[in-house]
Image (cartoon, rainbow, N blue to C red; front, side, top):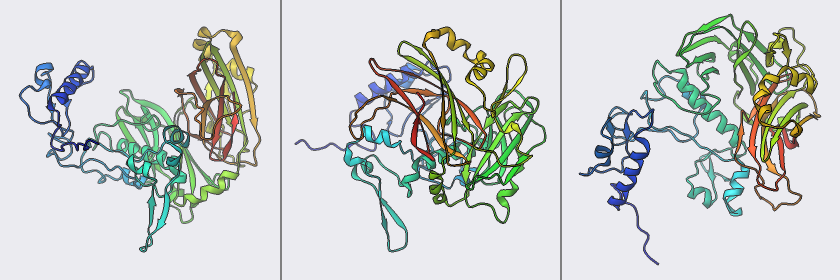
Length: 468
């Protein structure tokens, strides 16, 4: 057996091949409309025939992501962190030393179905826990996870909840200081929407981020707290606001969260809405407090749901629009107004309160303009309408709901991945408080001779429900 060659940390072993790859990369990127500079890696070594010079030469070239103004500018390894952090730390002004950090990331655990589809059965075992003599718990992953550079969670059963919190906090911490300390960010859909409402975990204040070039007038904020006992102990709305362009503003503090007896774990739902017609610009949802073990009993408290869906089919292409309603009874409170739900206006200016029980035809009538483009591309005889009602065990938050699309099979092997991929979701992994409604659209292509099955799962709907 040939000896395994170890790469040289000071440069590539095959310099010519490396330069061929570098040349192709320059050609690929040099005409990109948003390219401001050329960036290399620390593996590039000085050579006479530098492809940057003879294939571009029109802009600054930086030999590595931590040189010449990035991080400390000296090439020291000052990027990261890459492991689980306290979410509130991302909001503290002194957390990062530099306004433009070249790399920052976190643990990203795939869902169980992806692990089963990409690893052999011996890689499906979640990490074991070993108690050390100093009282700490060591997380011991299986060899396959170790090979893929697994970074410990300490609580693998809640990996997806931790992922969501970590990446949103990482990005919202940046946007909280954007234009005052940080000058660049990129991230996931939830935290990086152009107009965004967020909770500052360090100051306990509600913030509004306006990354657009237009002023945002006549808006207001609604914030509600929901506990695991299915009640709403705190509710507050702001005065009318005007948010300047390219600005992050701080509004009111959540006094309840600083009180003497807040709940150990609670849900926070801030919404930014138009004060004139209650149209919602941004909605966010947090679970916070501390002891997330208390979320376990929530798995058995299944709130009732009503799912109204329209499906448009053309050949192998499916377009679905679903109206998901948490039909739990709202707490008896005069302060919880109907604007706690998504409200739209139809073409006549009449308001549609989506928290009411409405028929499919009524819903379709009021939202027909949203379907007009789809209806032009899909024949009417292939449209399907369906209403699914899921009985529950009482009121409460429908927590961490998500859709998935599978191929219908009477029999399948243990661990077999039956998902149809890719699928485009307008939103997924969302939560609904009592009485609240959300609309989700899904589009996907179905392989030949396959019948799709769309299911809805959640933290407290873990047994799953078939929607299509």
